[in-house]
Amino acid sequence: MTNRDNLRQLLLQLDDRGYKAYMDIKGSYKFPDFNLVIDRVQGDPFASPSQVRVQLPHSVAGFPASLYQTPSRDIALRDYLTRQFDHASRDLSSRRGTGNSGLIAITLVGQSVLGRTSVLITDKFIEVRFVVGLPARGRRISGRQAAEMLCDDIPQIVNDAIKYKSLNATAIKQHVETVEDADWLRQQLAEKGLVAFIPDGAILPRSSGVDDRPLLKDAIPFKSPEELRVEFTCPNRGVVKGMGIPSGVTLIVGGGYHGKSTLLRAIELGVYNHIPGDGRELVVTHVSAVKIRAEDGRSIASVDISPFINQLPQGRSTRQFSTPNASGSTSQAANIIEALEAGAKVLLVDEDTAATNFMIRDRRMQQLIAKDKEPITPFIDKVRQLYTDYGVSTILVMGGSGDYFDVADTVIAMENFEPQEVSEKAKVIAEQHRTERISEGGKEFGQITPRIPLAESIDPSRGHREVKLKVRDVDEVVFGTEEIDLAAVEQIAEKGQLRAIAQAIVYGKRQYINGRYTLPEVLNRIMADIESKGLDILTNFPEGDLVIFRRFELAAALNRLRTLKVK
Ligand code: ADP
Ligand code: MG
Image 1 (cartoon, protein in one colour):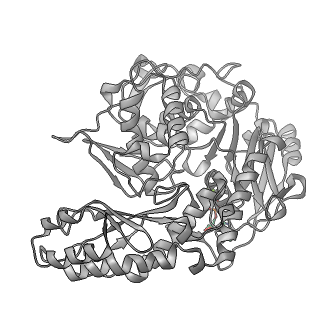
Image 2 (spheres, rainbow, N blue to C red):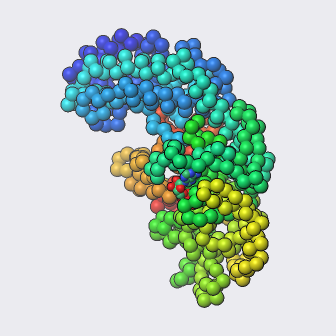
Image 3 (cartoon, rainbow, N blue to C red):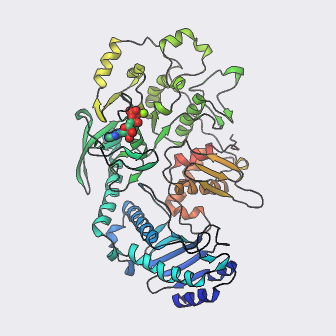
């Protein structure tokens, strides 16, 4: 194997040559502390930057094994090191010419702690994957600068970010222990009959609508109402108290601007762990909780929405309902049925993003518009059946209709950002002021029949390229010639999740989508493969920007592929 000095020599020789000559540096180099592997070299200074890995033996990295020897800790430490590398590389990388010359960057992270391919810990070493913008003047190689970047800057960054002795041991411990506690708490929920937990002292509001960091000024810390207070003894933090949301149907009510949506948003993202200092680091939610909303304009492929919608105008069937352009109510119905098909056990709904006619049909409207003239059976008539027939709980923000008092097990009122337990009060009111509604839609929820996706309807190719995937921000994937719009899939936390999801669809098509397996079977198999072999099975190259995702978001992407056909 060639060493660092050979690489430096080579880069100096390449100085001023045409950019393509950089291809010569592909390969592995033995540095004093680690191996540097250059996997992919960019074709020009403006192309996506070159992919590089560093493998640092444990003897050099020096992390105590206790910091990474359980699955929770492994993910947490890898996340921590990703963030450290990010800081160190931002400090050191600088513009050094045309295009992305001079860039040294690891995958972008947010507030969540997630399994990522940016840092891996094996028996032997810690591997860090990142990109380097090989420097150019115009389209000529800047050999000296490339030598500085690869042979000096990278060792410096690795030294500052990936060695235990350079880092803050207390902060690492806190990171790892916080994630471990959150995982532990999430596992305890079922035993206590809960679907979500929000600890006292949590900071739920965010800095702004476009900034997911905590609101620092004037944020009112969460305080649980006595009636819903539960207590846990976490492995690291010890006793933690807070509000437990029981399974069943839970209503969150309260005046406008009193913190209802903020609470629900924290619950939505409680399926993931968060970094210490986020404010929501011990907010935990059942792993299969899915946010449901209206999403008019989305496409739907043969979904049986008949539990909610029947007898459409023009006699269109709703047992296999397809449309390239769903309405608010049909999209919300499809979102629910698809979530159930994928295995959701908790549904999260906010009136702010729900279709009103899907949520409620009151006595007066029932009187004016006869049932045979209204295709929609409102959610209010189905929400209990979901729980009794399928064990699916719902947490619903609903400040606008007291009709739901009749179907709720638990009612929480938000008042000045503080929750109050008002279930009894709501029951009494429901007795005193009867709605006289006639329940609609029958005694049972209805069948959920898994669909079988057809491989030929899923085509990631474009022109001569077999696979063409592109991710634009966190809400759009270009899949072959198709765009998948995921703006309404609110539990995607990072762009890297979308990259992985796009790859997983390609992988699923190759391996399991064969006209025999149902969608849930396909999801099971893909997720099991990733669980046992890691995200790397999704790609040919070792990529550094894949992030773990849930089966629900994978299903959501597939369901929004406009070419999708099913049996
Ligand atoms: P609602 O859904 O009840 O209308 P929101 O959850 O949208 O209310 O909250 C309204 C505003 O109050 C938002 O700007 C939000 O960031 C802020 N907010 C929410 N919770 C808190 C809190 N605990 N402390 C301070 N501000 C908060
Ligand atoms: Mg709201």
